[in-house]
Length: 127
Image 1 (cartoon, rainbow, N blue to C red):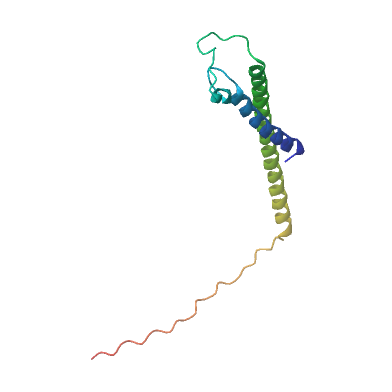
Image 2 (cartoon, rainbow, N blue to C red):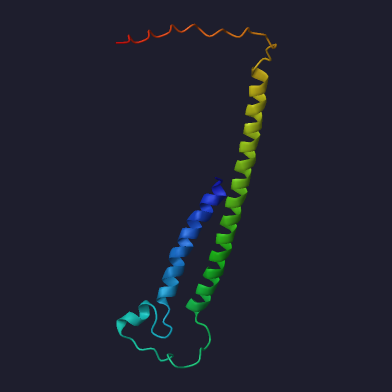
């Protein structure tokens, strides 16, 4: 795999952890880690106001995360296609090499071997 793919994987793991942290830190309707301290939420029954910085950051990180997931999937598909075409070329080369190595022998007439005579078993004596 290419270096860009592995850099993408590292960024992907970082974004996963960062996104989980951002989601858990939000204090929307007593959700998240901020509500564990016994704090009450004043916005539980109110309409949603302007998005906070954490909400905007969560949205941006989520979009970047999804774009990265699709990019890594595309890179994996391209890698699989190139591996399949390489293996097809390798198989073709092996078949060509095999067909060139085996010399064509002239058809020789080999006389059919006669079956060997099997001695008959002696008959049992009648009483």
